[in-house]
Length: 392
Image (cartoon, rainbow, N blue to C red; front, side):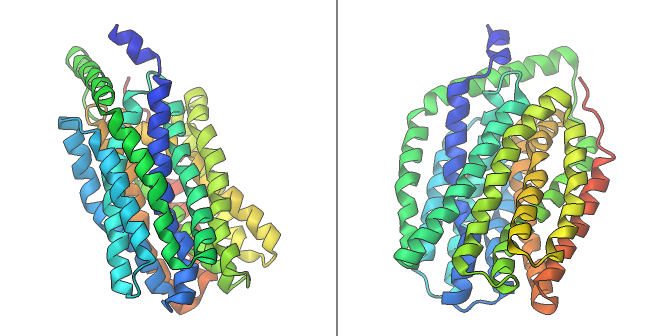
């Protein structure tokens, strides 16, 4: 019975994890989409704008691995619903605050909720995946990408038509998803318990140990990918306004355009990894990111730049789901911790580095920031060359 459950993915609950990820990242993606409006309406500079990305990530970076370790010891599916609720409250509060440090605190509060959701969400996505880990993590990642598509659309629409206080609109879908997740808590706990027993039985029978050195090497490319992603999310909207001379609305729209490319990449990345191998997909994707990152700031044509940004962001995301699953394979006895690092901490690392890129932009311009991102991508690709195959 356990083997049957393990080999067959539970699609209903896989899509429930996907829905939760949609809502969580829909809330969180409003931060970069709001930056052009906050620069214009609140008078903050580039470094301060990047500081808001830092605010949403700093607290997450400290607690996500810890929450992942806690999840490995005792299953707490309720963390997903609670995290989404906190994220929605934090983002909705942004529009009602005039003081920069008040906005900073609201964004950090939302980041705390984001930290609560992702380690448990990633662990549960693994639990309901059966033997299709790549596909299940792709579905989970696509949920986040859909959220990143919807968030900027909502942000640009409500701020343009209502003003910054329109951020409160995000509470409506937040409360719906939270209610659904709490309604299925008992069933999610049962699925989690079955997965935990299977892992324990496998560990006892095979003596399988966690592969920490291989996991550390993988984290190099994961963290570099996160810096590239966060840098593009933060500075592409500002680059469209400050360098390509587009409107704030079009700058925010670029977040959605990149998210569309990311969703397509996420949908295929895990499936390609199941078929062709996780390491191969990760390496090829990163190899494509480097030249694209160099090309983007070399053109002033908006259409060409838009196409380049879409492809660049998409290729950067192709390797995301395979990297998460590969990390879970390396730490098969600590899936929650692996999820907290590869999904949660990785995103936080990118956000923490954003203020440094922001100071670089204030000093040397946004074009220099984009060229710096290409150097980060090169470092990430180099790291992929040393990724090893996980033990069976």
